Length: 163
Image 1 (cartoon, rainbow, N blue to C red):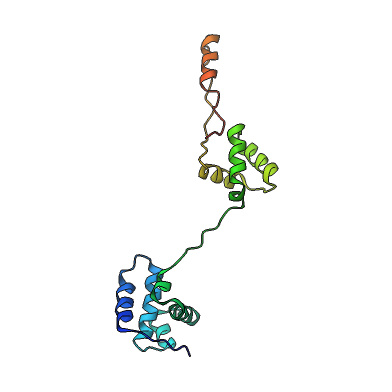
Image 2 (image 1 turned 45 degrees about the horizontal axis):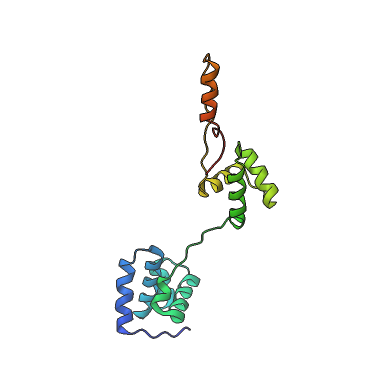
């Protein structure tokens, strides 16, 4: 059995944090430890809160190892793309020579990094990197050649990815 010592200050802090902390998982941790501080056994805490016994023991060990500060510290899981490791080289490549489509961007990223991703994942990665996608503009029909030439000059990057 895990033996813990709770000071009156810690009990008051746990009682406050179990209702007022902005992060709900931290509130649950504080509640678990608070109930132990009030003398409840793991089985009783499990019945009152509906939490797993392993979770309760993990919260108690967290408190034992680091106190209330350890209960408050939480880093949520945020998966990282493998493309993030190559972000700079990909950005340099696309700024130098923009891709005309997502399919082309996928293929060029595969050639650069040897990492293949779906069109949707590449699109999300490029948007997160600050690239914008432009729809190609139509050339005015039945216009004079000078006006068409001027239009093409203005919309040279239409349909291309650029930063």
